[in-house]
Length: 251
Image (tube, rainbow, N blue to C red; front, side):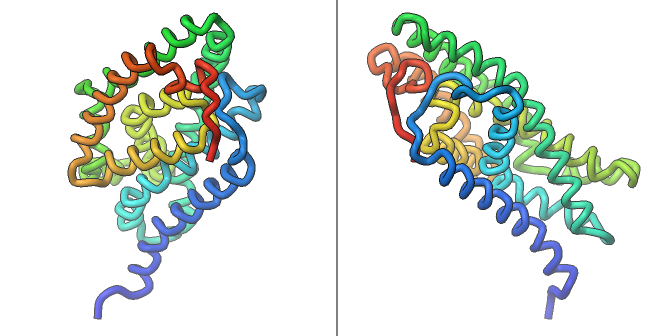
């Protein structure tokens, strides 16, 4: 018979992450589910925006991170639960910090949405194009490869000093995830930061990129689709409700 208490605790690591992600999704749906897509920061100040942003990243990113967390948990022999909590918090702090430029971008794009419709459409096309081009770059491939094949990262993390290992490992992996997925998060500016349909689709894309056998092809297909949207939005401005006032509802 295989397994035992240690195996159960290792399996509990990704389960815990999934439960946290599920709680974040429940909060997002119950709090924001009936709202239409809105441009900019939705009237939120910096503190409130960062709180909502961090919850969004918790919901969208943790499911795709659970396998890496399970692998990291195998390297921990004592105090697994608190150490995995440190790893997860450090990971999320990276995404929380990314909320600062996201807020600045949302403020700028919110102002762009108040410009004449043609200007908002042009900005939306630029957002789609930037996201799509990055999806096809070697840097995207490199970051995605680290997320898809993290064995090398585990060896690196084992070399960290014990006192700071979990904090540094979580932050390091979070940085690679940010490098991998920031271009997808930028799309929320075009679709509407709190557009829950867009969040669900992007979370599925992120999970497929990282975990599906054809994840790299998914990344490239999304890049090509984003570039296509950069062209199509001139004919169908409603494709970017967060910048053109398309009025797409949330979930």
